[in-house]
Length: 334
Image 1 (tube, rainbow, N blue to C red):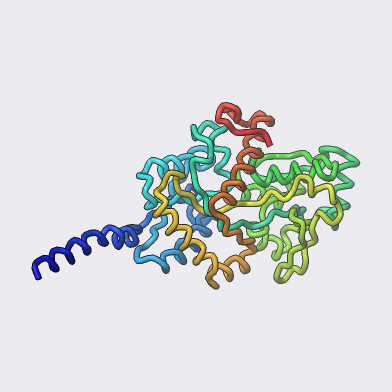
Image 2: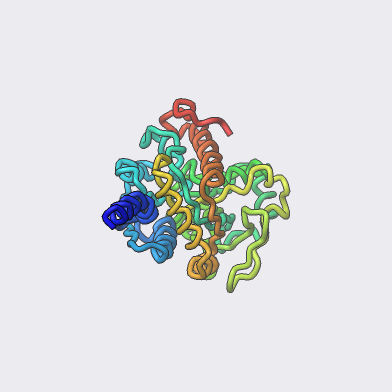
């Protein structure tokens, strides 16, 4: 009997690590550090997805905001400085890939493993009193009198600015670009008449479009988009097929963990992320706020951010808006 008891104890002890391994992550609450301000697009997106993820865990995911620096560098640095154990997520977006060339981050972006929830597509719009009723009228006017039409698209090197550059390259138009500190200021500039054209996301413009403050001319994605109370916004690709060479350049909002986080923790995060993305809550939120869901992780997500980093970093460098050469950071040209 004694031998049986000892043998049983040995078996239990041998199996204990396996049982512990399955339950070891997460064993306490997780923190998501959002690098942009509370209430913004990234913050809202991260709060939505983490609230759904924690339903499939036995712990909470607490969201905090750490803003400042350049391109979210303060929040990224804080998140990356924490132990690489999966208990700290970094809520970020495509704009963070420029932190390195702007001097706020000394690493290539592939030190992160990213989880992309999605993003809202960009569109090109004009002020309510602008004479342009179609994308063709606007583009042909900009081609006839190059740089005579003022356009805002957030700051130099932002995703909205890159989309404006893509419109120029794909259509032959030339606008007089005026940078602002963000989407809201650039949209305000359009409403007050400082500029005629604005490129930001549909999620950001939707209320202004409904209120008649702006007039949408074209989506900067291959497909038209149905918007409640507004009808269908046509794709700019329909009138200018050449845009397909440069667009779409899409938002990539979500979160990341350091690439060297243990596989066990990463597998749990991927599994709960996938489950959360499939919930009605996330799908309904995306539909109501005009977000296109992605759900990419791993190699697929890395490919997206690699392309964004290359495009954004070298564009900033060529515009003279970067302080660190992308080559120094090992960022290849697009």
